Length: 271
Image (cartoon, rainbow, N blue to C red; front, side):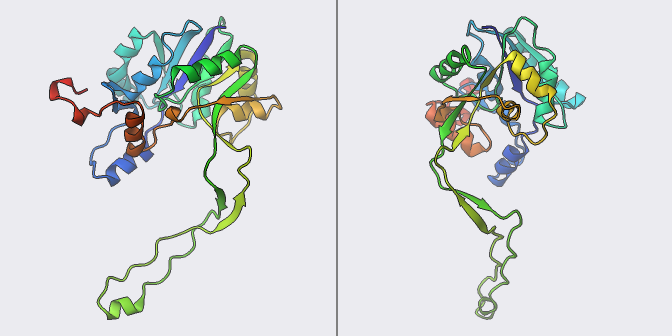
């Protein structure tokens, strides 16, 4: 089993930066540059795979913009080169196109392709072992967790906000409109519903076939395989394999991994 790992890292982290600004950070950086136990999130993610004998190639797809890619290489290329990583340009149009770009760099000798989110640095070794063991005898394997919360479908458009309370204005109280809210249209049965994680591992021939088929709208790589009518096996994921989307996620992951943030360490030990 010779695995090529593709790590898409071409995103702009806009949701992360927006949430950071809302917390008072006037100049937030990419979530992949944030510090996690003394190293950037991206390096932590890559290190999940560097010591595995079945992983033969790691490809990181960086930003598509030339200027942003130059900054990306300045921040990461030296360390990634030490880890044996191939760095390529991603694509601005979509994540799937970024993966497609990376697929062109997968060596012929590789038998399997794994795709892993750059912002999931907390995958524990036992979870990775589960996935790769299952991939030896199954053509498509993904990790997932059962959905514990009640799942509801809501209307696309928000309801119109209510008018300010005129009595509040008369009494001198602040008159504020209710926040926009969306109407529940359906409560879904969560039986058998799981939340997919990464890495998702595929037999290379199947993965290439899935990407050769035009299939817009897929939200992960497994969906492309599903649309071919091929089975996808689900193995148990792990809460530590959470995807960092906001600063709160980063803080939660530090707590789960028992890693302190830079502000909690002596200045000469901060990243």
